[in-house]
Image (cartoon, rainbow, N blue to C red):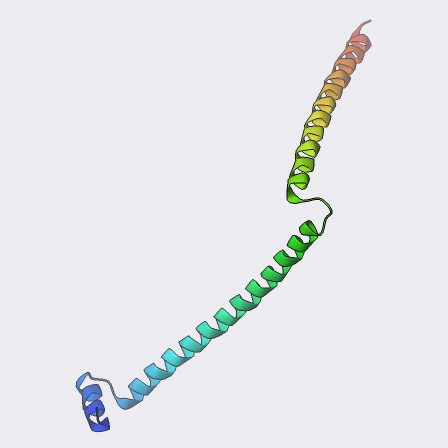
Length: 108
């Protein structure tokens, strides 16, 4: 299409050449902002990827494999449940002793 044809189309839409240029500038600026945002996302993703890779190396460099580590986790979780149970029993015993002491203190 010739440039005179473009001008007549712009003029027929009620848009001046200056307005068209301004719209184009705004569109380009918006596109540049989006590119900068995407670049920031890429940097964050690379950083996350490196962190995950480091974690994975830490897990895989262990002498034990993932199955052994999971088994250890289960054992530790069971030990934690047992310890919590013991603590609860201990607290109950202490509460009973405190109730007895309180009762004896209130007795004439």
